[in-house]
Length: 215
Image (cartoon, rainbow, N blue to C red; front, side):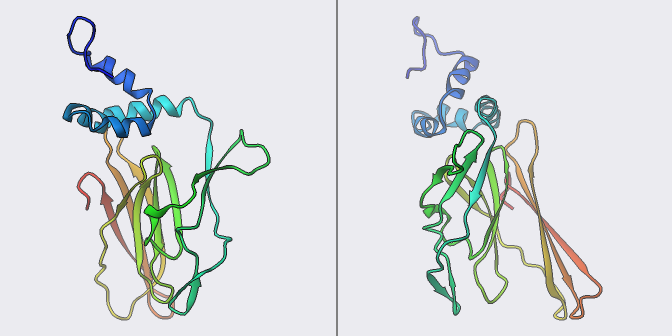
């Protein structure tokens, strides 16, 4: 694909964007290496938004299905857990007959090391947030963002709550969203609830992650 028209002049920016927005994510990832201008255009939040809207309006709603009912094969801390290398992630749409769905990722190697139990939230513009626990015997949370189309996984920085020693964890609550309309600034809100040993006098601590500053 060239970047000029028949008379040798450059493509108008809006025309080039219209052509590129019709391409698949896989093709766009390849074309990012053509030049710095193409790389910047494909990464531009305005283009990302147009590309998502263009393809989103042409597709039927789908559901991401994460199957936990698989053999527990890997010993960790005297427990047996599932290998996330072997857990298929399946997309089910209203077009599927028989309820089998279409495998999205057979072996999600890029999700390795993100926890014993994983919970997904979203998607928001094609991006999921997820939370997991690295250990079966102690609370060691792991949070991240995942784009199934590009297979890009972003690990959120750890949050260290300074607490009194007599408090213990009771619950976690997560929220996920972004700042519209022309930014790619995703935000994750984590509310960590603690209480005294007798489950009285709850205290809540919050943290907000912003992808634009990775903090």
